[in-house]
Length: 590
Image (tube, rainbow, N blue to C red):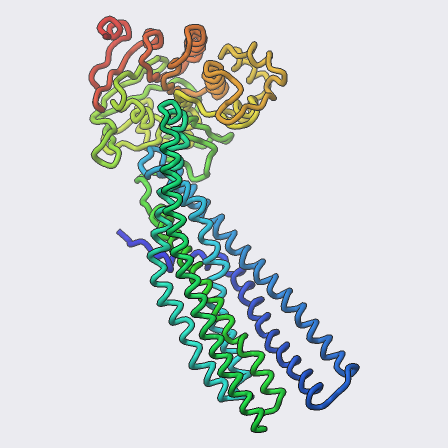
């Protein structure tokens, strides 16, 4: 198995994808450095003519105009360099974030990748941490090798003694930068990991806030968050202390080097062995010689941030995909709550099963299917079950018995470790997964609705649906009167997660989306859980209309729901305990 690239190698590989912008940033900054040399020469020439030659103001105006023009050109070069560097960093961020998103879509349907909080932190602030490396460290690393060399080439002919001071003092700056940076690298990596844990912990608290308030535990958890935040603050200040110490060290050596050069030039001027033009020119360039090295030292901390982020990103991007991709190459607007296809109809790998494309009811069969989370926990074992076409099958069992896992396997969101799932006799793994999803509908216990209009939420399942199809779907879901009673009707905007409609209305709105989609296989997870008798009856009636000509799998514990099914599959501890009729099951059910 190939090893992962090192963070440094991976970051430079990303930089090569935007080498045009990076080269523009470096060339603009290098051009600005050359303009500094020219400006220093002109300033020294002005001083020479004023102090030594005693020339008046008028003859100096052209030189002063050139100095002002060069200053403007330096500002323009700095702007172009910064703009190009930021553009390169933005392109890298977009590429990495897109790659992460696509990889997570193809890896995460079964939730095997870890917690949501750390993943969110990697995709957001982790990717943002790459900007400083691309926009700051890499350009400064190149400039630190080019600009000091350019300064030496012009200083050496004028004053070779000062050149020796510059040559021998310069290596101390990157050397100390590396030594101090090694000490802060561990601290920085520890802070990045701590931030990731904080993100996951805070997400858990926000999601569980209603329960915390009910059990009067919100204040205690708030104090814990404050404690963890203070620890993170202390750790961040420790990193900053080291950073400030490194900045002081860099300034110290550059200041000492410039001072030694000034002393040498002063003695040479007193002895009359050096002209004011050359002496002042060298003295003006001495700080500029150290400036790229000092900037590189300051940007070294950006390197550590980028390295820490890359260490988290690389394992996600390099994690092996399943033997057969579980999601189509083109990213689709689908979530675990609702499988949403596209408006194009692809072809099947196997032309034998045209019924999937035609939208007819299909027969699903599990043949000795086994799937485990992490290899040794949860999941299902050796499941052999047939779900006939044009039928309603209830999936029952205690919490953790594997009902949701089996549903995800049927939907193609996970691939069996052993055994196979067939659709009308054709192995599901051989079907075009995008075509298969065009014939699916998955409604969870709490259907997800975006902060958008009712029409927009309905059109997720079928973007090309017209008003007549929408009204028919609403009527089938017993929602026509509810929607027409709203002031803005279908244009009514829902809040986050469907705020604005009751729980029963949201369940029926989810069914209306399924009606609009006209899927062959419909999977419902506890469609009537938590509803009052009136709303439960409305949902059951809508389910009855939905079942016509479709294959339905319903995860439920409610007797009223189970009684409408032709067969009942009972799971226990991930195994299929029995398959029976609903009447027989309800007669013996406790």
